[in-house]
Amino acid sequence: MKAYAIVDLDINDPDGYSKYPPLVLPLIRKHGGKITHRISDFETMEGDWCPKRMLVIEFPGKSAAKAFLSDPDYQPIKEIRKKSATSLIAVGSSEM
Image 1 (cartoon, rainbow, N blue to C red):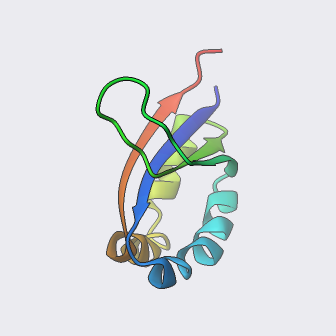
Image 2: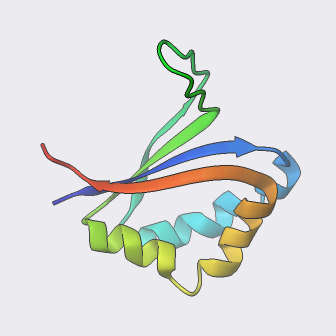
């Protein structure tokens, strides 16, 4: 069953963050993942959630998504994201 990592990003250092995508994309692919959506220009319609930029990353299953996030090769790359952006990440399985 496919799984999705939903990433909510607020980039506070664009120059620093620019180093992240070219490093992380090969690791996403290594775990069978692909970015299916990059979404921005949000307008909050209800509630107080106000995302800045969201990514939807599709993986073959939840275990692949979790393996990506815990991959030792990802840990130093993750630090680039953490220093240059505030982010929230959730992983869920598709029910359709």
